[in-house]
Structures are given as structure tokens and as C-alpha cells.
Image 1 (tube, helix red, strand yellow):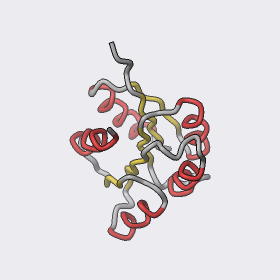
Image 2 (cartoon, helix red, strand yellow):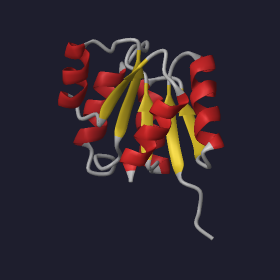
Image 3 (cartoon, helix red, strand yellow):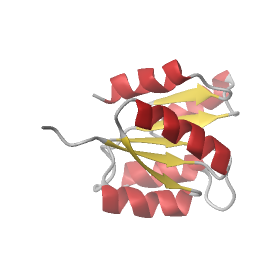
Image 4 (tube, one colour):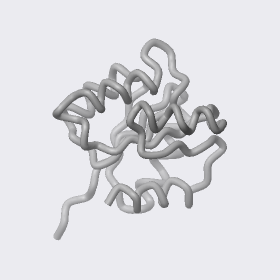
Length: 122
């Protein structure tokens, strides 16, 4: 029997974290969550999730900064980051990739968009 895969969900708005977690759990994933970029860095280092879904606009350390730090850390650089954010204009898409993200999903998002990102994590 294979172990459940772990996803880290990072968003300062609890209902968004819960909605993403429910979709991922329904797809058979274990979910850990963080409410800001600093907590995300710590959890990623300790828990080593297979994928991180992260908001961009958060108080303190935003998602772009957290993604840069994850990409610069040998212990977390291989973990794919998928931004889930209201910041989803073309320039945001380009900037997200420049920061090391795999992709950017705009809010409001659909379950199929999140599940599609999981397929790309393999």
C-alpha cells in the first residue's frame, strides 16, 4: 500500500485554505496548511510536501518572497509551487515563473484546475 501524498496549502484566508484542502483531500492527498509565507517555509522544510499551493497576497512575507526562498533552499527547491491568487494577469503569470513557481491558478478557481496542477506535480 502506498502512502498518501502530502500537499501544503498556504493562504492567509482560512476559508480558501479549507476549500483547497477539501478538494485535495477528496483526491486522496493529505493536506498540511500554513497562514503565511514564514510558516510555509518552516513547514516545507520539516514536512517535505510533494507540492505547495500558495497565495501571493499575504501579510508579512508574500507568496513571491516565500517562493524565492523555497527555490533558493537546497532542501526545498525541488518542491513544485503552484500559486493560487487573485493576482493572475499576464505579468503576474510571468513574474510567478520568474520566482520559481510551476504555474499560477487564478481565483476564483475550479477543482479541475487544482487537480490538473496535481497531475503536473508527478
